[in-house]
Image (cartoon, rainbow, N blue to C red; front, top):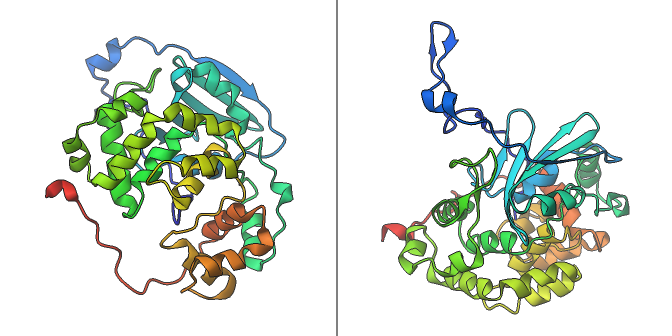
Length: 346
């Protein structure tokens, strides 16, 4: 969990370029390649506008869904818009979200367009209730004041959060992000709409995940334990997606029936799929020390100490942890970073 919820800077490119590369300039004029000039105009998507009663911060709300700066299913653009590609119950879909003044404009393409737009308010935190949170520590209160746009997203999708969370088990975030990127690009499909052509990808279907050969998992740096967990999960994908209609605690219990999915992974999933404000991540390598240092000056805190410090926020412990991470108050590093491994080279 640690470090994965900070809003990422927008990428220095836009979907207007070919392959994301800057256009060459000759004599002060932009040279447009022939393939670009002859390309047909992008098909218009289905549009929905929505006027929330609070200021929407796309980076804060949707940043939790981004799996690294090169996530093939997520793009944050220089114009402030956010693009996401999802595999919905209705099929693949692409969603573009942008805030114009106090109004949100969502545009969607593909078979899942109506599904994505129908859940746009929940995706941006409409089902969340920040007023239920009462700061008990100065650092938490200060961060909440500086980040008024923080709301917890609710995607309504389980598998798209479960698989990358399993990939993040027991490895560095860089290794997990690399594995997610390689597997989605190789076994997923181009996202529908103007983001297609290699810029945005929809993650593989459950069947496609199940058919990935063992050597491809190895090349992506995924060990047999994590690969086996994903394979077990996709075999019961429909049953896991049903957990969206359950309470967060019941959903976690169902997820943990899959061997290899424990409290850490299930919490990471329901934080995104359900927008669960109390699903605190236990078993994380860094989070207890960050919470302990921020609230009590204890950089060596373990899970039990972290849970004790977060007890005043019962019912809102995940939100409190998010605010602590966003505060930037982390203990100074005492040792080198964890060595990145790559079993694909073996």
